[in-house]
Image (cartoon, rainbow, N blue to C red; front, side, top):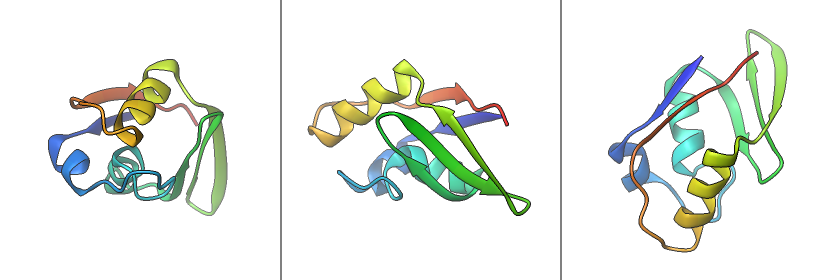
Length: 81
């Protein structure tokens, strides 16, 4: 599943939040429930099933830049179930 983090998600994102950062907001908009974006794993729920994948390097870099008030740009990445 392709996740597109847009400028809208970046503007609405909360720094330091694993469930309200731009990545989680984009995941929620894509129809995933209870997204949690951490430095090691990304987790979510879909159709009453829980999923977890290792956090991709580009997502981790995005999170670190966003949380440390660095400049970030929109990002697309793939999540596999």
